[in-house]
Image (cartoon, rainbow, N blue to C red; front, side):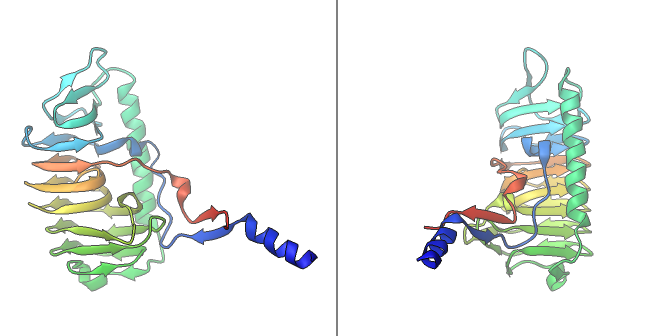
Length: 262
């Protein structure tokens, strides 16, 4: 009787479900932005792009047709569903942006500093046509996505891509199995370029410029079209881009989830 009671009691406590892939970096206040550029954020076609989320330019350089708020702390634009912040607006905006930039540096250093990758220079950096599983991917050079890239996994799994060169994205990223864009992290040391009709998924931090060139879409802050977030220690320029930033669910969601057993 005691054994049966103990057995069922243990079942009712919890079941640990472990996430596949590396834990994500802590974005902190960088997660407040769809687009964050240290030296500027520009839209070369101010009537077509659509950005869902806030936009930040730490230096104050802004190439977006915007209207300043009454208190001078932010601006708005028909192409941005959210607020626009630049370093030359009145306090507390400059300090807010500097905090975001510091958090961006911390997240980037964490991403690029991870060791013991699961995959090194997969397919020589040509990811077009591949189907990937969760893990840490390291590329000593550049990465090209010339045809559809499929990223698989559950909503609790993670990816980190460490790209020491440039990223050139010409095609589509497709998510499969429930994986969500905010669990996919791209650290790019060089220039990240998104070409016409491409679609991107994930959170991208670029050491160099981030370019969106004509008719693209993306998630998580910065592709021709995509879902996610996009940031650069140089600048972000988007042309005819649709960028959708989803809510960041938080740093402590990684590694294990406690679920009450039925």
